[in-house]
Length: 301
Image (cartoon, rainbow, N blue to C red; front, side, top):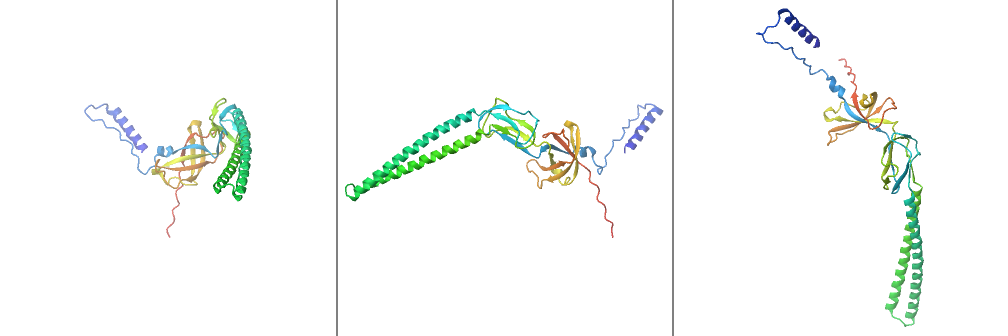
């Protein structure tokens, strides 16, 4: 087709050079190139599918109690080993809570002792009333009142004892948290996010850092609804990362069995077949499926 256009262009140039300009004759524009509908669109194939590099594992390192960050031992993108200390928290608020809990425990223990004295007194009063009833000195109503007081005193002892156990459990919990003032990496990898710097306040259960296994990256990508069936597990793909000027290869491992009704996309993932150290999680990339070899035609019998 391009050869035909070239011939037309050369012919047009030859006519103008031989005869000169002819103002009374209409100018003939060269014909536009027509793409055969069965020919593949190279640009469309090159576009591929948008994906993102994703770590195999990630771990959010959370604060075990509400306090401030005293020291931050790592920086963003630092490589860390499993069990390595990442930050140290201020334990003073925890020690204050522990001191208050210990004082409360002593008070509740005193409450148990006081309730036990009242229980013994109530039981003794019940014994006197029961003897007096047998001697016809008091009425049955007075005995019933003494029985009620004895049961009430016994319940008070049980309630006070339960409060003591509750305080002991609280103290044990605080003592356990006191050993967690050093935040440790739960897996080896790189520091991906730092939510709080030294001196910042952190709340219990909220993340302080995020560690990812950056050496084991894979690619998550989305396939448009009109391209369903073009990619299957086991297919070879090229992975282009324009941001880092890197091109590598991969193999499709999983393709979702159903279409996401909101995004109108099929989610899939591919495993990198070549390890490249400079790759970083979260980087956008482009997945370009490789052309599949044509199926061999079976000979007719």
